[in-house]
Length: 324
Ligand SMILES: Cc1cc2nc3c(=O)[nH]c(=O)nc-3n(C[C@H](O)[C@H](O)[C@H](O)COP(=O)(O)OP(=O)(O)OC[C@H]3O[C@@H](n4cnc5c(N)ncnc54)[C@H](O)[C@@H]3O)c2cc1C
Ligand code: SF4
Image 1 (cartoon, rainbow, N blue to C red):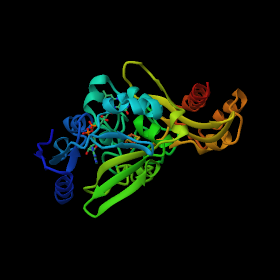
Image 2: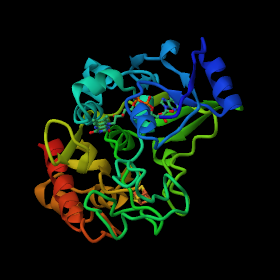
Image 3: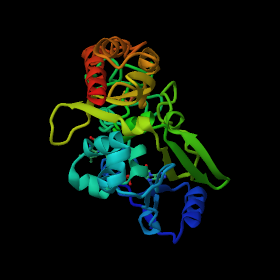
């Protein structure tokens, strides 16, 4: 493990300035970054500790939910307003990792967790994401857990997070603060497709920090659900997951948001399903027909063609749960 110096700035402004000047990395709960450092997958020489900043607030109002970046996954999941008004978010968090990790991990860090591709996590293998230009052994190798949507000839690793999938159907807006000021980025624009630079995973600029996450309140958010299919129930990353949120008025679906995890190189919104649901009666036939649209443009690899079938079934089950 590479030795590093740890800076503990007193406030967010000094933390951003320290990270920008020294090209340092932030550390929050450390549940992903420290594992990567121990395995020499990431080798930071300077870390900026976010823990002393506080910034762990969870505030719900009639307009929406505001989360500060150091809020713990477990605290957000258990917050009574989140459970009632943004159930998909609570459910996605509770389906993530283990209770011990959720008690330590933060929502800012969760959005920036690295992929679980086994080749990426083992320095004995080539990997374009870890060492640009070295190759992608997953494309012709062990790729059961890899993406069927959004991949490139350079990388087919899935984004492994659950919470970001839920936030996609909740139209979350991230506040990013850097040396040049603050900007807002929609969750759907935060993660990048791999293209020919799979090592660049988000639109974060050097030194930029996630300083807030806002989720609007809506009838759709209240009628939402997260379904996760995984290889074991205790804790495991998604093989496939589905997040849905529906606004239903007098039996007709007015607005729909549908997204999937475990299938895309980023949290994957399914506009084809949303379009098939909008304006339709919330009945069994409409839900089935819409779910069948899931995964338009999918390009399965040798070992993961089953994910397309599983995606359609998972979307259907999630829709049925929300409508019931
Ligand atoms: C055994 C295990 C099982 C897991 N299972 C799941 C699962 O099923 N589903 C799931 O979604 N996740 C799962 N995870 C991942 C887990 O959710 C993440 O490790 C955790 O959310 C990371 O949060 P953290 O605060 O510990 O981040 P850290 O490890 O501290 O940081 C992660 C990254 O985020 C950056 N960062 C942190 N905060 C900020 C900020 N505010 N602004 C800018 N950059 C920041 C850091 O620089 C670093 O690059 C699992 C992890 C483990 C170890
Ligand atoms: S899929 Fe991506 S992360 Fe995995 S080996 Fe290929 S380049 Fe690396």
